[in-house]
Image (cartoon, rainbow, N blue to C red):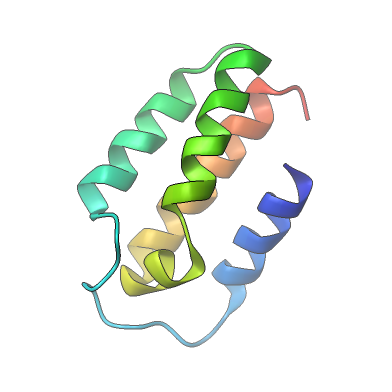
Length: 86
């Protein structure tokens, strides 16, 4: 999880942001994942959603949605870390 958070933080600090569109997951998909991640209250739930997030949130997908994609990905990482007790 720490590696995942580090990668997301790096993505947030990059200055190159691609235009919206073209990612595998839509913003609606990522928003739904964030809602699910923030609803997790235990490590088992967070671990399950972390695997889902790892498959959905590639660097390309996050960047393709610009700042909003990065914001959502960061929110997901923070919610999962909290549920995992990190």
